[in-house]
Amino acid sequence: MCSNKGGITYRDAGVDIDAGNKAVELMKAAVRRTYTPGVVGDIGGFGGLFSLAGFDMKEPMLVSGTDGVGTKLRLAIMMDKHDTIGQDCVAMSVNDILVQGATPLFFLDYIAVGKLIPEQVATIVRGVAEACEESGCALLGGETAEMAGFYGDGDYDVAGFAMGIVDKPRLLTGENIKAGDVLLGLPSSGVHSNGFSLVRKIVFDHKNMSLQDEIPEFGKTLGEELLTPTRLYPKAVLPSIRKGLLKGMVHVTGGGFYDNIPRILPEGTTARVNADAWPKLPVFAKLQEWGNVDIKEMYRTFNMGIGMILVVDPENLAAVKAQLAKQNEDCLCKSVAIEEAGAERVIMEGREFIG
Image (cartoon, rainbow, N blue to C red):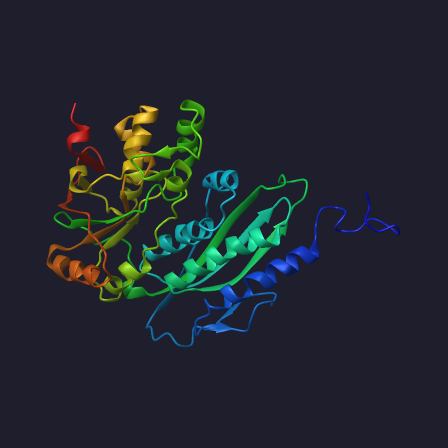
Protein backbone atom coordinates (compact mmCIF):
# COMPACT_ATOMS: atom_id res chain seq x y z
CA MET A 1 0.00 0.00 0.00
CA CYS A 2 1.29 3.48 -0.85
CA SER A 3 1.86 5.92 1.98
CA ASN A 4 1.18 8.92 -0.28
CA LYS A 5 -2.23 9.22 -1.95
CA GLY A 6 -0.69 11.39 -4.65
CA GLY A 7 1.73 8.74 -5.87
CA ILE A 8 4.36 6.17 -5.00
CA THR A 9 7.27 7.31 -2.81
CA TYR A 10 10.82 6.04 -2.32
CA ARG A 11 9.71 4.67 1.05
CA ASP A 12 6.98 2.70 -0.70
CA ALA A 13 9.72 1.15 -2.82
CA GLY A 14 11.57 0.05 0.34
CA VAL A 15 14.10 2.85 0.83
CA ASP A 16 13.60 5.00 3.93
CA ILE A 17 15.78 8.13 3.71
CA ASP A 18 14.66 9.27 7.17
CA ALA A 19 15.85 5.99 8.68
CA GLY A 20 19.21 6.48 6.98
CA ASN A 21 19.53 9.97 8.40
CA LYS A 22 18.68 8.69 11.88
CA ALA A 23 21.38 6.03 11.59
CA VAL A 24 23.93 8.72 10.73
CA GLU A 25 22.94 10.77 13.77
CA LEU A 26 23.30 7.72 16.01
CA MET A 27 26.82 6.95 14.77
CA LYS A 28 28.27 10.47 14.53
CA ALA A 29 29.88 10.61 17.96
CA ALA A 30 31.61 7.26 17.52
CA VAL A 31 32.91 8.24 14.08
CA ARG A 32 34.28 11.59 15.29
CA ARG A 33 36.22 9.87 18.09
CA THR A 34 38.32 8.16 15.42
CA TYR A 35 39.51 11.41 13.82
CA THR A 36 43.27 11.88 13.64
CA PRO A 37 45.19 15.07 12.75
CA GLY A 38 45.13 14.15 9.06
CA VAL A 39 41.33 14.29 8.78
CA VAL A 40 40.04 17.34 6.91
CA GLY A 41 36.36 18.26 7.23
CA ASP A 42 33.54 16.40 8.93
CA ILE A 43 30.79 13.87 8.37
CA GLY A 44 28.53 14.56 5.41
CA GLY A 45 30.90 15.39 2.58
CA PHE A 46 30.71 13.66 -0.78
CA GLY A 47 34.23 12.35 -0.23
CA GLY A 48 36.51 11.89 2.75
CA LEU A 49 39.54 14.17 2.90
CA PHE A 50 42.87 13.25 4.48
CA SER A 51 46.07 15.31 4.50
CA LEU A 52 49.50 13.68 4.23
CA ALA A 53 51.29 16.91 5.13
CA GLY A 54 52.50 15.68 8.52
CA PHE A 55 54.42 12.65 7.27
CA ASP A 56 58.19 13.04 7.04
CA MET A 57 59.13 10.33 4.56
CA LYS A 58 61.66 10.19 1.74
CA GLU A 59 59.56 7.98 -0.53
CA PRO A 60 56.01 7.77 0.87
CA MET A 61 53.88 4.97 -0.54
CA LEU A 62 50.17 4.36 -0.03
CA VAL A 63 49.11 0.79 0.73
CA SER A 64 45.47 -0.20 0.31
CA GLY A 65 43.40 -3.23 1.21
CA THR A 66 39.76 -4.24 1.00
CA ASP A 67 37.84 -7.18 2.41
CA GLY A 68 34.58 -8.29 3.95
CA VAL A 69 33.49 -10.48 6.83
CA GLY A 70 32.14 -13.36 4.77
CA THR A 71 29.63 -15.89 6.01
CA LYS A 72 30.43 -15.17 9.65
CA LEU A 73 27.73 -12.53 9.15
CA ARG A 74 25.11 -15.27 9.00
CA LEU A 75 25.89 -16.18 12.62
CA ALA A 76 25.60 -12.55 13.73
CA ILE A 77 22.23 -12.30 12.01
CA MET A 78 21.03 -15.56 13.55
CA MET A 79 22.02 -14.37 17.03
CA ASP A 80 20.84 -10.79 16.45
CA LYS A 81 24.25 -9.71 17.76
CA HIS A 82 25.88 -6.98 15.70
CA ASP A 83 28.42 -5.31 17.99
CA THR A 84 31.47 -7.43 17.01
CA ILE A 85 31.14 -7.60 13.23
CA GLY A 86 32.53 -4.08 12.79
CA GLN A 87 35.86 -5.10 14.31
CA ASP A 88 36.01 -8.10 11.99
CA CYS A 89 35.51 -5.81 9.02
CA VAL A 90 38.30 -3.44 10.07
CA ALA A 91 40.74 -6.16 11.08
CA MET A 92 40.57 -8.04 7.79
CA SER A 93 41.78 -5.02 5.83
CA VAL A 94 43.96 -3.25 8.41
CA ASN A 95 45.92 -6.41 9.22
CA ASP A 96 46.51 -6.98 5.51
CA ILE A 97 48.09 -3.57 4.92
CA LEU A 98 50.07 -3.89 8.15
CA VAL A 99 51.79 -6.94 6.67
CA GLN A 100 53.48 -4.67 4.11
CA GLY A 101 54.76 -2.34 6.81
CA ALA A 102 52.02 0.29 6.47
CA THR A 103 50.73 2.51 9.25
CA PRO A 104 46.92 2.61 8.92
CA LEU A 105 45.63 6.08 7.99
CA PHE A 106 41.91 5.73 7.39
CA PHE A 107 39.11 3.28 6.78
CA LEU A 108 35.90 3.33 4.73
CA ASP A 109 32.98 1.01 5.41
CA TYR A 110 30.11 -0.24 3.26
CA ILE A 111 26.94 -1.75 4.69
CA ALA A 112 24.16 -3.12 2.49
CA VAL A 113 20.83 -4.03 4.12
CA GLY A 114 17.45 -5.34 3.09
CA LYS A 115 15.63 -3.06 5.53
CA LEU A 116 17.47 -0.25 7.27
CA ILE A 117 17.08 -0.39 11.04
CA PRO A 118 18.92 2.68 12.37
CA GLU A 119 19.89 1.17 15.71
CA GLN A 120 21.28 -1.98 14.07
CA VAL A 121 23.37 -0.05 11.54
CA ALA A 122 24.64 2.31 14.23
CA THR A 123 25.70 -0.68 16.35
CA ILE A 124 27.69 -2.11 13.45
CA VAL A 125 29.35 1.23 12.72
CA ARG A 126 30.21 1.80 16.38
CA GLY A 127 32.08 -1.50 16.23
CA VAL A 128 33.89 -0.29 13.12
CA ALA A 129 34.76 2.99 14.84
CA GLU A 130 36.07 1.34 18.00
CA ALA A 131 38.31 -0.92 15.91
CA CYS A 132 39.57 2.09 13.96
CA GLU A 133 40.44 3.83 17.25
CA GLU A 134 42.39 0.79 18.42
CA SER A 135 44.21 0.63 15.08
CA GLY A 136 45.05 4.35 15.10
CA CYS A 137 43.16 5.13 11.90
CA ALA A 138 40.23 7.40 11.13
CA LEU A 139 36.82 6.21 9.98
CA LEU A 140 36.83 8.68 7.11
CA GLY A 141 33.59 7.80 5.41
CA GLY A 142 31.22 5.08 4.39
CA GLU A 143 28.02 4.06 2.70
CA THR A 144 24.84 2.42 3.96
CA ALA A 145 22.74 1.06 1.11
CA GLU A 146 19.15 0.00 1.68
CA MET A 147 18.49 -2.55 -1.06
CA ALA A 148 14.89 -3.69 -0.72
CA GLY A 149 14.11 -6.69 -2.87
CA PHE A 150 17.78 -7.60 -3.15
CA TYR A 151 18.52 -8.56 0.46
CA GLY A 152 15.84 -10.06 2.69
CA ASP A 153 14.64 -8.17 5.75
CA GLY A 154 17.21 -8.74 8.48
CA ASP A 155 19.99 -9.65 6.06
CA TYR A 156 23.00 -7.43 5.46
CA ASP A 157 26.54 -7.45 4.15
CA VAL A 158 29.56 -5.51 5.39
CA ALA A 159 32.81 -4.65 3.62
CA GLY A 160 35.62 -2.20 4.17
CA PHE A 161 38.60 -0.46 2.62
CA ALA A 162 41.79 0.51 4.48
CA MET A 163 44.50 2.93 3.43
CA GLY A 164 47.94 3.10 5.01
CA ILE A 165 51.30 4.71 4.41
CA VAL A 166 54.87 3.43 4.46
CA ASP A 167 58.25 4.90 3.55
CA LYS A 168 59.54 2.77 0.67
CA PRO A 169 62.75 1.76 2.50
CA ARG A 170 60.53 0.29 5.25
CA LEU A 171 58.25 -1.60 2.84
CA LEU A 172 58.00 -5.27 3.82
CA THR A 173 58.11 -7.53 0.77
CA GLY A 174 59.84 -10.65 2.11
CA GLU A 175 62.44 -10.47 -0.65
CA ASN A 176 65.33 -10.52 1.85
CA ILE A 177 64.09 -13.55 3.79
CA LYS A 178 66.74 -16.26 3.83
CA ALA A 179 67.55 -19.64 5.32
CA GLY A 180 68.04 -19.38 9.08
CA ASP A 181 65.49 -16.65 9.68
CA VAL A 182 63.01 -17.17 12.50
CA LEU A 183 59.20 -17.23 12.56
CA LEU A 184 57.37 -15.69 15.52
CA GLY A 185 53.67 -16.42 15.89
CA LEU A 186 51.25 -14.01 17.53
CA PRO A 187 48.05 -15.45 19.00
CA SER A 188 44.66 -15.23 17.37
CA SER A 189 41.47 -14.66 19.34
CA GLY A 190 39.70 -17.61 17.73
CA VAL A 191 38.48 -18.49 14.25
CA HIS A 192 38.69 -14.80 13.19
CA SER A 193 36.78 -14.28 9.90
CA ASN A 194 37.89 -17.11 7.63
CA GLY A 195 36.69 -20.66 7.20
CA PHE A 196 33.10 -20.04 8.26
CA SER A 197 31.61 -21.94 5.35
CA LEU A 198 33.33 -25.02 6.76
CA VAL A 199 32.38 -24.05 10.32
CA ARG A 200 28.71 -23.77 9.37
CA LYS A 201 28.87 -27.05 7.45
CA ILE A 202 30.24 -28.81 10.53
CA VAL A 203 28.07 -27.33 13.27
CA PHE A 204 24.77 -26.95 11.42
CA ASP A 205 24.64 -29.54 8.63
CA HIS A 206 26.78 -32.28 10.16
CA LYS A 207 26.15 -31.93 13.91
CA ASN A 208 22.74 -30.17 13.95
CA MET A 209 23.98 -27.87 16.71
CA SER A 210 22.48 -24.61 17.93
CA LEU A 211 24.39 -21.38 18.48
CA GLN A 212 22.85 -21.35 21.97
CA ASP A 213 24.48 -24.68 22.90
CA GLU A 214 26.76 -24.35 25.92
CA ILE A 215 30.17 -25.87 25.14
CA PRO A 216 32.10 -26.72 28.35
CA GLU A 217 35.49 -26.48 26.62
CA PHE A 218 34.66 -22.91 25.57
CA GLY A 219 33.11 -21.75 28.83
CA LYS A 220 30.44 -20.02 26.74
CA THR A 221 27.90 -20.74 24.05
CA LEU A 222 28.89 -21.93 20.59
CA GLY A 223 27.65 -18.67 19.09
CA GLU A 224 29.58 -16.49 21.52
CA GLU A 225 32.78 -18.37 20.75
CA LEU A 226 32.35 -18.20 16.99
CA LEU A 227 31.50 -14.48 17.03
CA THR A 228 34.69 -13.59 18.93
CA PRO A 229 36.03 -10.73 16.81
CA THR A 230 39.20 -10.87 14.73
CA ARG A 231 42.28 -9.51 16.49
CA LEU A 232 43.81 -6.20 15.48
CA TYR A 233 47.62 -6.30 15.32
CA PRO A 234 48.81 -2.70 14.63
CA LYS A 235 49.59 -1.77 18.26
CA ALA A 236 51.57 -4.95 18.79
CA VAL A 237 53.59 -4.86 15.58
CA LEU A 238 54.06 -1.24 14.46
CA PRO A 239 56.89 -0.50 16.94
CA SER A 240 58.98 -3.32 15.44
CA ILE A 241 58.11 -2.23 11.90
CA ARG A 242 59.16 1.36 12.58
CA LYS A 243 62.50 0.21 13.95
CA GLY A 244 63.16 -1.88 10.85
CA LEU A 245 63.31 -5.13 12.83
CA LEU A 246 61.09 -7.30 10.60
CA LYS A 247 61.83 -8.97 7.27
CA GLY A 248 58.29 -10.03 6.49
CA MET A 249 54.85 -10.74 7.93
CA VAL A 250 51.98 -13.12 7.23
CA HIS A 251 48.33 -12.46 8.06
CA VAL A 252 46.96 -15.99 8.52
CA THR A 253 43.59 -15.81 6.76
CA GLY A 254 41.82 -18.03 4.22
CA GLY A 255 44.31 -20.64 3.05
CA GLY A 256 45.78 -21.01 6.53
CA PHE A 257 49.48 -21.82 6.81
CA TYR A 258 49.90 -23.68 3.54
CA ASP A 259 48.69 -20.92 1.23
CA ASN A 260 49.56 -17.73 3.13
CA ILE A 261 53.17 -18.29 4.20
CA PRO A 262 54.43 -18.87 0.62
CA ARG A 263 53.09 -15.44 -0.38
CA ILE A 264 56.12 -13.81 1.26
CA LEU A 265 58.79 -16.46 0.69
CA PRO A 266 61.46 -15.79 -1.94
CA GLU A 267 62.16 -18.52 -4.47
CA GLY A 268 64.52 -21.10 -3.09
CA THR A 269 63.17 -21.08 0.48
CA THR A 270 60.87 -23.29 2.52
CA ALA A 271 59.18 -22.60 5.85
CA ARG A 272 59.30 -25.36 8.44
CA VAL A 273 56.69 -24.90 11.18
CA ASN A 274 56.59 -26.85 14.43
CA ALA A 275 52.91 -26.98 15.34
CA ASP A 276 53.79 -28.22 18.85
CA ALA A 277 55.30 -24.83 19.64
CA TRP A 278 52.02 -23.19 20.65
CA PRO A 279 48.85 -24.29 22.51
CA LYS A 280 45.78 -24.89 20.35
CA LEU A 281 42.59 -23.05 21.13
CA PRO A 282 39.72 -25.39 22.09
CA VAL A 283 37.55 -24.17 19.22
CA PHE A 284 39.88 -25.74 16.65
CA ALA A 285 40.09 -29.05 18.49
CA LYS A 286 36.30 -29.25 18.68
CA LEU A 287 35.76 -28.31 15.03
CA GLN A 288 38.22 -30.99 13.96
CA GLU A 289 36.54 -33.54 16.24
CA TRP A 290 32.97 -32.66 15.22
CA GLY A 291 33.76 -32.71 11.50
CA ASN A 292 36.43 -35.41 11.47
CA VAL A 293 38.49 -32.92 9.48
CA ASP A 294 41.91 -34.00 8.23
CA ILE A 295 44.71 -32.16 10.03
CA LYS A 296 46.16 -30.74 6.82
CA GLU A 297 42.74 -29.41 5.89
CA MET A 298 42.55 -27.68 9.28
CA TYR A 299 45.89 -25.93 8.72
CA ARG A 300 44.89 -24.97 5.18
CA THR A 301 41.55 -23.47 6.29
CA PHE A 302 42.00 -21.96 9.77
CA ASN A 303 44.59 -19.91 11.65
CA MET A 304 44.85 -22.66 14.29
CA GLY A 305 45.61 -20.13 17.03
CA ILE A 306 48.21 -18.04 15.19
CA GLY A 307 46.78 -14.90 13.59
CA MET A 308 49.98 -13.14 12.53
CA ILE A 309 53.47 -14.43 11.76
CA LEU A 310 56.60 -12.27 11.90
CA VAL A 311 59.77 -13.22 10.02
CA VAL A 312 62.87 -12.05 11.90
CA ASP A 313 66.63 -12.23 11.42
CA PRO A 314 68.10 -14.10 14.42
CA GLU A 315 70.20 -11.02 15.23
CA ASN A 316 67.02 -9.01 15.78
CA LEU A 317 65.11 -11.68 17.66
CA ALA A 318 65.76 -10.33 21.16
CA ALA A 319 64.87 -6.78 20.09
CA VAL A 320 61.58 -7.87 18.50
CA LYS A 321 60.60 -9.92 21.55
CA ALA A 322 61.39 -6.90 23.74
CA GLN A 323 59.16 -4.68 21.61
CA LEU A 324 56.35 -7.22 21.78
CA ALA A 325 56.72 -7.47 25.56
CA LYS A 326 56.32 -3.68 25.84
CA GLN A 327 52.96 -4.08 24.13
CA ASN A 328 52.02 -6.98 26.47
CA GLU A 329 52.03 -9.22 23.42
CA ASP A 330 52.56 -12.95 23.77
CA CYS A 331 54.85 -14.67 21.31
CA LEU A 332 53.42 -18.16 21.01
CA CYS A 333 55.91 -19.93 18.82
CA LYS A 334 59.51 -19.62 17.76
CA SER A 335 61.47 -21.91 15.53
CA VAL A 336 64.27 -21.62 13.00
CA ALA A 337 61.78 -21.94 10.23
CA ILE A 338 63.29 -20.78 6.95
CA GLU A 339 65.56 -23.16 5.10
CA GLU A 340 66.75 -23.93 1.61
CA ALA A 341 63.94 -24.95 -0.70
CA GLY A 342 62.58 -28.46 -0.41
CA ALA A 343 59.80 -30.29 -2.21
CA GLU A 344 57.18 -28.15 -0.42
CA ARG A 345 57.03 -24.43 0.36
CA VAL A 346 55.60 -25.10 3.85
CA ILE A 347 56.44 -28.13 5.96
CA MET A 348 54.25 -28.66 9.02
CA GLU A 349 55.67 -30.79 11.82
CA GLY A 350 54.51 -31.95 15.25
CA ARG A 351 52.52 -34.64 16.97
CA GLU A 352 49.41 -33.95 14.90
CA PHE A 353 51.26 -34.74 11.67
CA ILE A 354 52.69 -38.09 12.73
CA GLY A 355 51.04 -41.15 11.25
